[in-house]
Image 1 (cartoon, rainbow, N blue to C red):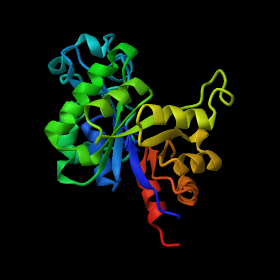
Image 2 (image 1 turned 135 degrees about the horizontal axis):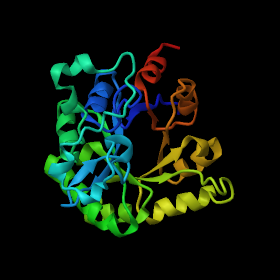
Image 3 (image 1 turned 60 degrees about the vertical axis):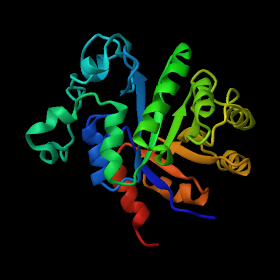
Length: 266
């Protein structure tokens, strides 16, 4: 069964707008992405906020930790100042309100942005081992309050956090994340081990770094009932490869060329 894969924006359309911002998510919508993948962490007052790093150094240009600031304080931070704007960036899309769409958003705000369309949302929980239960609890709470259970896949490298999501609500779809280890990229990542880890934590899907996306592995995972998502790829030729392996979705920094390639008649 060869199906055309969904195309999801990695941290939004992060090649064209600051990652994990409403600007990047809005650009992904405008470019026709089937959804987005983005990251969440807990603020000091235990509110899920959308940011990849534990520190604000890279995107916020300030030497503070996300966990040291409240959600209200984090919402005031412009995380787009470090972004090298692409020639076709989104200033025109927001008029005079560019900075507001480059600030650090709440998870609830992203759900509200996507209320007007049917995009799929992959929410990656970023947490230390001691934070997994708290983050999973708050993420599921926001999913319930927003009534987005049918449109969200919660993913993480922290399998304990995934298990906690399933304990709270077994109906929330989840994905176990896997990437190659630099120190031992082959022997440390055996397909059956990854499949067993995903099964043990109750995951519904495997989200694989593209270097792990081998046909034999994906076939084994699918035979065990897992759907497979691959990240992060920006070469349109991946669309053909993904279709041949019945991969559910590809996650791309710039969704538009991938979508254009996928939608071309063949």
